[in-house]
Length: 141
Image (cartoon, rainbow, N blue to C red; front, side):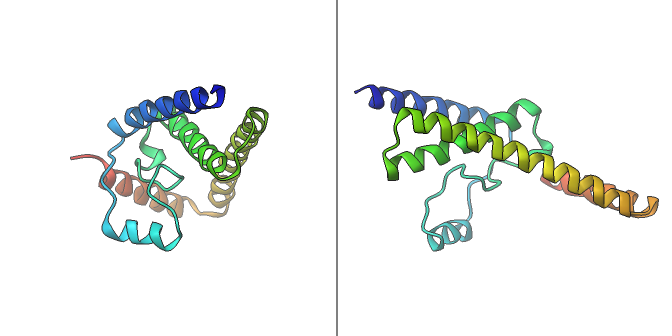
């Protein structure tokens, strides 16, 4: 019963969080091709790490953090359904997943900085202009 209550609370939390993130993110319904991609890989649509809720570069830090937490919770929920995790396992796995996200964020930042160090000023300007054009393309009309 305790596990059911925890799962119910988690479901309510992720549902509210998902609605909050999606509401201000420029979320668009997945395309039929997207569903075919998920079916091909044997999973259903969710906020499972795909960039369905908008590019994180255009999100506020709060929304980005909420989306990252949602991804962790969704992954943990899928693991729990398949493996029937204990509360202690869930806590430890949640921590590991959050640490993994932070390491990936740091690695992306280091990679961007290393690439910038190799580019000429003109190339950096072109790269920045391309980034801005991409952001404008994704901005809601």
